[in-house]
Amino acid sequence: MTAVTAENAERDRVVSQTPASAGPGPESVPRPGGWRPPRHLGVGVVTLWLSIIVLLPLAALTVASLGNGLGGFWEAVTAPAALASLRVTVLVSAVVAVVNAVMGTLIAWVLVRDDFRGKRVVDALIDLPFALPTIVASIVLLSLYGPNSPVGVHLSATRWGVIVALAFVTLPFVVRSVQPVLIEADREVEEAASSLGATGWTTFRRIVLPTLLPAVIGGTGLAFARAIGEYGSVVLIGGNIPRETQVASQYIQQQIEIDRPEAAAAVSVALLAIAFLTLLVLRVLSGRAQRREERAV
Amino acid sequence: MNVTQQTRVGLRTVALGYLFVLLALPIGVILYRTFEPGLSEFFASISTPAAISALNLSLLIVAIVVPLNVVFGVVTALALVRGRFRGRGLLQAVVDLPFAVSPIVVGVALIMLWGAGGWFGALDRSGFTVIFGLPGMVIATIFVTLPFVVREVEPVLHEIGTDQEQAASTLGATGWQTFWRITLPAIRWGLTYGVVLTVARALGEFGAVIMVSSGFAGVSQTLTLLVHARYIDDHNTYGAYAAATLLMGIALVVLLLMTVLDRKRSNR
Image (cartoon, rainbow over all chains, first blue to last red; front, side, top):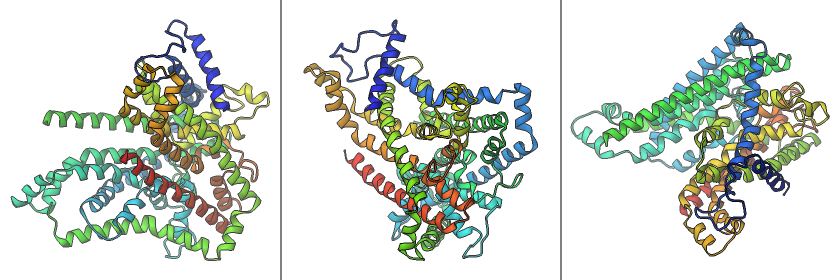
């Protein structure tokens, strides 16, 4: 209820701020084109909301990262411990991305082309990492691979621990992006290839993989971007050992704790830049793939 | 692709083995460890005063965040689908931004804006605590859950078009009547799906919330922070397992709801 009144108040303000573009007043109904928030009001509210929640904090972050000038920013990002944490983050995320690309594609193939009892349960299980809070992922893995491991595998405070945690939380990305493509894929071409004498592996490499590649790359990129920023799932199992298992998000958190906000902001901006770059590359790649497909048709 | 039975079974074994080691086995072990001492032990562990207050705080945050996300999410989706204005592409990108930002970075950004030394620091100095208070945790949760409702409602709005709404307004319905009687019923499953995703993420958010919470047990500790504090600060491993199992139970309910809703949506 209060939310609605607040929204109305904000609408009034936005309207009075944009008299030139206000157009017909909110009472001018009926209007063709379906229900929409009175013209420009909706846009104003949306802009205001997104600014306060998303844009202003990120702007404040960027400005804070330059609090000691560009030199200060560079110094904070290239400080040995900061650089080491960024290196560990990118390295570990790259390993996880590759694991996902291979295992995700394999799991998707098994879920689509294979048939066995309990397949539906396995299929549902794939989404679990998305539904599970990240800190729970950490605890779950620690209960098996932690200090009191019942199977004698100790991953706590090792890079392998971080990799397993990240593989856990990013599992669905590749599987869920490859699965629908595989379902849609034209099997006649594959059958033609094998009737012409191609082995299973050749058919996969020459026919199936090229079709799947955009989906595999897309899912892998998303998994990488997610792994770069992950915190909750690695915080307990990683051990936060500088230069060894400390990832960038842990370093940033540490900088806030020891009251060095500029350094925290600078490394945050660096981390954001890596994530955005990844997503940008993905967008370019998928655009290219789409154009190629259009040309083929 | 003709694969021999041997390869087929081999691939299946590798895939299922991976899932078993990564997902099923750890979850089995934590369930075993949680319930091994008996159900009463589990309930005792999740009904300590600190645990109950953590559950209440988590639910309070959900209760504040969900209505805000519903109202602003639907308005945003309407503006993005039906609006023709410059900068629409930019708004589209901004809506997706929270997915690309690390939770820790969200926390730092909010401290830089709302913290005592931040742009809106005057608010903090005048006695209204945002960072290290409930408002900060709410804002952090809104940040990370912002895309869900928008992205679930948007495709439905695209699909339904505006014919029925035009008919309604031609027949003399006011804007609000059209919205309540036509638009809202049409988008209800998409909206519900978005709300379920929002609830799940709001209950489970950890990184962004720990940055802006003071983390005092019984005051500003959510369920996820409780799990963390029990494991790290109290060395109460069993308590952490029990609280994690509680969260896992909630996540399982969410997963079931998602499956049911997904079917409802596609049947429409």
